[in-house]
Image (cartoon, rainbow, N blue to C red; front, side, top):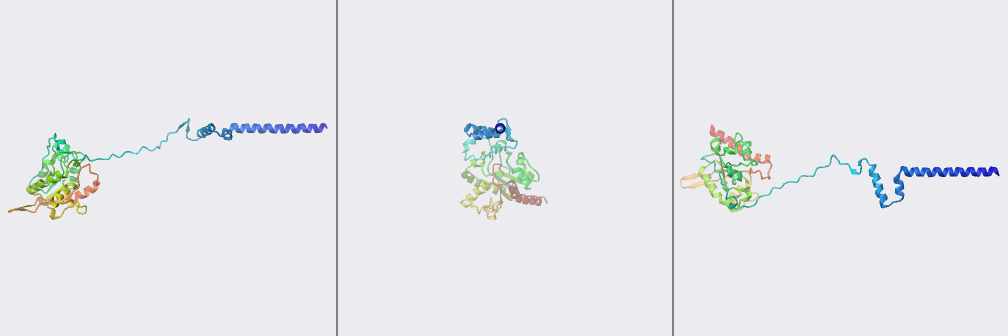
Length: 292
């Protein structure tokens, strides 16, 4: 009987010890992993706490604030769109004194016809004088002049290189869009008279819109897309033809070049240079023949 009671007490002690060890293990497991305790009682507060614990143990945790990335992309730059001014009546710039005059002389190799003087050109009295205008650069790169000339030398072009300068419209504006087609067309007759008087070998039209105006007046209709071309025009399009009595002159050949305005973005620089180069090669050869 004594042996049986002792054995029972021994078994109870073993069971109690085993239960205590299990409770201690469970307590340690819960303390070591707060996630387990929180997951057993899912609630809104528990969910927020779990998220906070996950962030704390994440590599990018910096005390509750997100670590700024050193490779964050910069915001895209906004493209500035150039807009044309739209028609402006002559009264808008009536206060300006236009100091620009033609640079012409008889029997030149080539006369360049521009659209009209800009504000800077009119006030300074020198052609193509705006810094963004490519005229003088293209004149040199194409071979029309052996060196890069300055706008202040425009009056010397006939004497230096047998080149002349004039415009189809004389009144100054900020840009070409402030002119009307009607006043451009009205300038054609005077331009033809200038060419017939000075009689250059070639007339270079500096810009598509000028040739479109000449075409409208000559043909009584707008030029079609398939009819337009840069470069040398047909002999039937010669300018300044004189046929009055004994005074006969067949006129000047026409070369249509690109505009040199910095506001015109329709063609790339190398495309403009390619067109101008065809004219420059001819002028170089002709100038060389004149000096022989």
